[in-house]
Amino acid sequence: MQAFVVGRVLVLIWVASLATNARADQDGVPFWFSGSYASLAAVPANPGWALVTEPYYYSGSAAKSKTFQIGDTLVAGVKTDEPLLLFQPGYAGDSKILGGQPNVGLGWGFGNNYTSVDVTLSQPVLDVGRSDSLTAGTDLYPVASLAWTDGNDNWMTYITGDIPTGAYQKSRLANLGIGHGAIDAGGGYTYLNEKTGLEFSGVLGFTYNWENTSTNYKNGNDSHLDWAVSQFLSADWELGVVGYVYYQLSGDSGSGDRVGAFKSRIASVGPEVGYVFQLGGQPAYFNLRGYWEFWAQNRVEGYALYATLSIPLGSAGK
Image 1 (cartoon, rainbow, N blue to C red):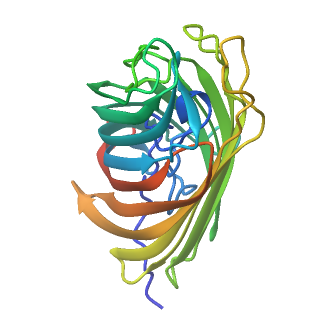
Image 2 (image 1 turned 180 degrees about the vertical axis):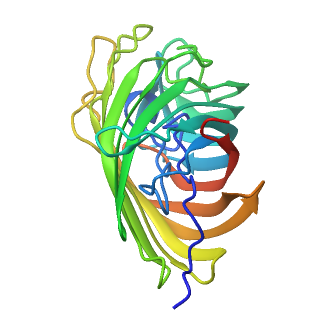
């Protein structure tokens, strides 16, 4: 039977959690960028340089009955909209480490965050609705990974983190940075049958957060699962279903915590379409997917849209 999948393609977007697509932790914003992984997540990339570019949009809200602490302000009735353009240059090595292919990259984004609240619960502006909009850059997100392949089976492990260089002020409702450092590690698996075109992927990770020294607020530790199931209809086109589950393992804390030991959770599901094409004689990949959220606790709930483009910039050694 003719193989459905052409080559190995880089489809990872390692720009972990620079958006407000989650709410609890402080002001409901965790480090991990849910939906970062989708189809082919653990497949080793072609050796060489690559650039992942990702337009992204998130919209979500929470009812007036839920109180959040955003910076140093207590609020209720939160709504947020965030369009971003994300970039991740990376390099996949030709030489193996522990039998796996190394890959390193650095993520960054630029965009807008518009956040509004129905009620402000902190003095001196009690019971006054507010809104805020900010256009700026995000934090920096370095990442390193190793990936292995054996027939239809692919595995990978990664470590990433947050360098808090993005726009953040504790007095604002809208921020593009999270105001503190974080480290995240985990692993994933992809089953890819190049004869039948069947693929499924899952990536599980865990986050440790350092305290935000501006607010003396410390986010709890988090767990997250990104998953995808897809079918290649031809050598070029892929259709599938994607989703994520995010679950906070320990409550928020710190001397600046005014809302208690928050724990958040969320889940989502949505459609995915992928397209493999050649660019300069090397495989490139485009992926469009959407996530509709449910099962929310202590965070906003809404939807996220991704358009990921991974393009080769040159083979290893060139």
